[in-house]
Length: 431
Image 1 (cartoon, helix red, strand yellow):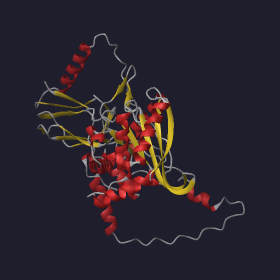
Image 2: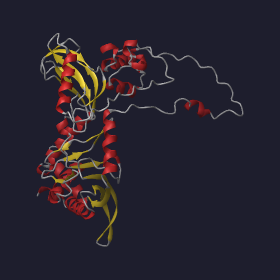
Image 3: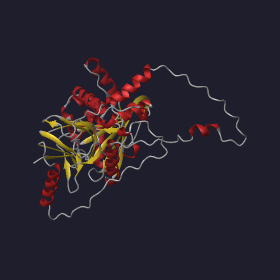
Image 4: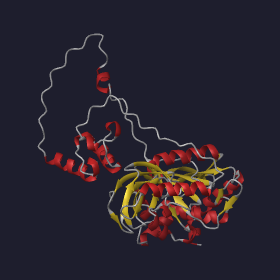
C-alpha cells in the first residue's frame, strides 16, 4: 500500500505549515533522506526529509498553508492508485473512532483578489489564483527590503515561481545597468487660492501598506493573546544596584577568553534564584501545577518577523562562560531561522531583556507554559541614597510578570529579593 504523507508537527506550537517549495515532482523516485519539500512553520523555515522509498505518486498541495496532519503527498510504487491509498487510510481512521461524530468539512475561503493594482507583466504561469505573483517568502522579503516590484522580476522556479536567485540576479542587473537620465518634468501649474495643501497630493494613494501575516506572527498573536486573557497576570518591580556587578564583570572580562554580558549575569542569577523558589519555576496544567526540578531558561530573541525563544537548558549548572557561548550561538541561529524544534522547547522560565535598547522599565506577557517571565531594563546611572548620603549609583529595574493561578504576590516578591541579593553581591554566582 502506498504511504500517505501528512503535514508533520515540526514545533510544539505549530498548528499549520506553509509549503514553500517541493524539491521533487510527481513521478520522481524518492529515497530515504531525500529532501522532499521546504516548509515554513511558526518558528522557522525547515527542510522536510523523506522517511520513505518509492515514487512520488501525488502532491496534494503544491504550495500554501496545510493544517498539521493534513495530506500533502503520497509515495508508493510506480503505477499504484494513490487515491485508493488516501481513501483506505481515511476509512481506517473512521473505523477506529466509530462513536465520534463526523465533523462538517471545512473549506478554506479563497483569498480575495486585491483591487486597484496594476496588471503584472509576469507570465501567467508565475501567477497564482486571482493573478497573485508566485514567489517564495524569502524572495518576497528580499524584494520588500530592496524596494523592488515583484512584477518586474521573471521567475525561474517551478511554474515560473520567483525564488531567491531571481531577486539576486535582478539586483545585480540593476547595479550593472547605466543610470537612466530622468525626463524633465513640466513645471507645475500655479495653485489656485482654494487649492489643497501641497503635501496632500504627495501622500494621496500611499497612506498605508498591507503586510501579509507570517506563520510566526500568527502564532505569536495567538499564543500571547491566550496567555494574556487566560492567565491572570500581575506584576512586581524591583530596582537592583548593579554597581558591584559592573566592577565584578570588569574583573572577569579582563581574564576571560570571551566577554561576559550583563544578560549572562541575569540568566545565571535567575537560575540560582529559581532553585531556591521552585514555585516560580512552575507551570499551570489546568488540574495540577507542575513544579520543575530542572531549570531551563528561555531567552527572548528579536528576529525579523517577531520573536523566538531559544532555551538554555540546566542553566543553574552552567558557568557564565558556557551560558554566554550558548546564548550567542542560539541567538545567531534564531536570527537566521535555523533553530531546531528541540532548541525552542522545554522552558520553565523566560527572560526578556530590552536594556540594550535603552528601555528602563517594561512589562512582558508570560510565555506559556511558564508561570513567570522577567522583563529586564537598562542600567541607569543616577543619584541614590546610601547610608543617609547621596551617591552615584547604577540601577537596573526588573519586572516579574506572574500567573496568579500559580504564583502569589509574596512568592514572587521573595524570588525578586533573592535575585536582587545575588546581583548586588555577584560573588554568590560562584558559590
